[in-house]
Length: 224
Ligand SMILES: Cc1cc2nc3c(=O)[nH]c(=O)nc-3n(C[C@H](O)[C@H](O)[C@H](O)COP(=O)(O)O)c2cc1C
Image (cartoon, rainbow, N blue to C red):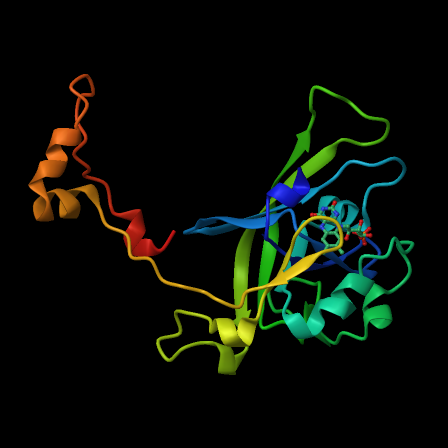
């Protein structure tokens, strides 16, 4: 099942505990879910025993930095997934470097091309129909409070991050990972634009549907 949802972006999450002990761990149940205001999701699978440190820290402090994972970091990132006790440092184990954040306490990861400081909006318990032994999974929704992009990785208009610099790694099934090696563009159109250029498209209208005329802003223009 998991291998069918691929590739999944990997985020390396920095949090701190109530006692201000730093924690780093990778998560691929991770996505942007809205862009304005920017909101991200992160999900924790249920398991027996204690909650994952990242989840416990989010519950206690409500803060996390989402650091992107590039090819040159993947082995160090993989090392941070170890189930170390809360007082052990995954960062020291990985050799990654910390960099200060400005809107919250957890440090960023210096090696990350793109880091997002976030505050917790909502935790949603995944109280599914098949309870397992141990905790249920949990979904966290996080709102961005500050973005950091490596200077050489952003274009002049400060709008786009260069994929060649980001070199993101995706997670596949099991312990398999993927690089993005062959990106391509595919322009999108809107119903209004398409029917102006090709009026015959109006014949596609379903007689029973009230109207197919779109008056909302075009998502294709936003690139979502
Ligand atoms: C690439 C990668 C992606 C992962 N994604 C997730 C995930 O999305 N959700 C999850 O619960 N665990 C995920 N894990 C496992 C956690 O990283 C692992 O349980 C870790 O020990 C949690 O650390 P913590 O207790 O410090 O939070 C992933 C591991 C790797 C290597």
